[in-house]
Image (tube, rainbow, N blue to C red; front, side):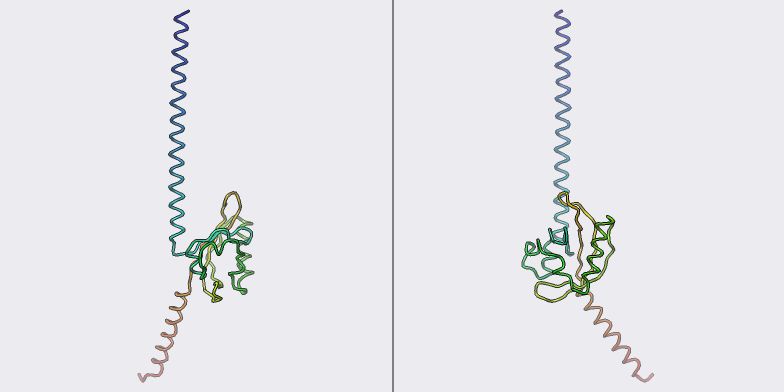
Length: 178
């Protein structure tokens, strides 16, 4: 009886030790996974925050997230000035219908939209030319649209100057005696 009882105690002790080791292994894996998620979120946050492109998240037509690049692009004092505002406040009237058609397509189909060009209105009333691309996303359980906005204003100016220069050069060639 003592021998059997001793075997049972040793067996139970060994089983408890194995259980404790398994729980410790699971906790260690969970902690490592949580650390990786935190590191990944931090890398993503830095990528978005320090990007030369504007990033924003739209939920039901309202801006619920914007990075500092977008705030600067729209001549905003800071990012929080954009939060809660309707996107229509920043889309030139000539582009609103097209823009919102494309945004609703993202939500309905769950697919991304390719780059498209439009005019946006800044806080100071000036317009800027941008190109936008968007993808569907989940943000704290909500179906949202995540947009990337690239300012094309300088690029457009350079293109116009280049065209003027080419036109001037063409006129010079046409008027010069050959």
